[in-house]
Image 1 (cartoon, rainbow, N blue to C red):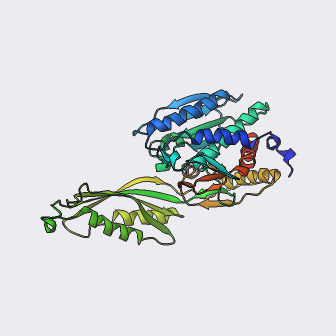
Image 2: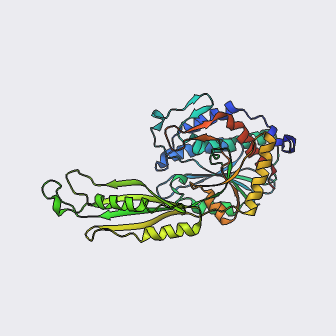
Image 3: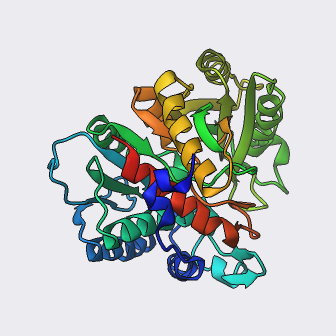
Length: 382
């Protein structure tokens, strides 16, 4: 199928113009736990979308987290008609100040910066797709709404209800999370559960009365080893955060940690959750508490999702590249919408590598083809 079958793929996208907007967004650092920083990023995105003619709704944050932005583009069918939801997040894992260690810079085909791949890159591509569609006076068959959220990197505890409510009003969900390493898209994601752990011991002076104390850190260390050794091919376990103690000369009273479990099938995750909740302290005089945190349900490929993928692949082929369908580890808000049964396609964003690290980058030559793919989908879905 040729590009003439998808007129939006002939729109005059320009990689340098896209990159200029992307680097401006990446320079606005927006770590999840810094609500003020996230809201500065929401201000910037809301202004860009308003300039395109979208009606902006600001949804106040809760749980101490940032706001959300909903942008609805005018359409003859009106707001009530089911349409296309572009679902993206603007929070990142990089704390304010990361720009000193990961400055925005271009080296050949790579452009580096905090959050530039995950996922400001894909969000900018979606905005640019709408910009080009509107500038060309092209009509979309369905209304288009953007929902930009503030807490995806911690499992979306404050925005899941908004995401699911908005998805239920729409026919399709497009998620511009980063493309897979080979450029493929995501048609399913694994189930994920988070856990909070706390050990409580008995304090004592570590120098004068060491034997009288019971170390919460020591017990947590034992638990971490036991938890990670539960990993199998069906279900993985890892501990990524730990805090304990206050004074080196005091036996620690408390220690807290956060764990993550991931599985390809919901039943395997459910079994993993049961194992975590069944953990017990190895010592009678130190207590262990395990509480379940945020869970992302498994999203399994279905016929509607694969039909959407087929449409995306035809568009990609017309542009001149191919995309493979993949189920992926690492959750996204697509877990929620896909599990709801709303037709969802994820991984539509930029190509790049090393997200969540100080080497995070995008491939500049992926910007135009991926923007054309999004434009092709937005203008042809009906």
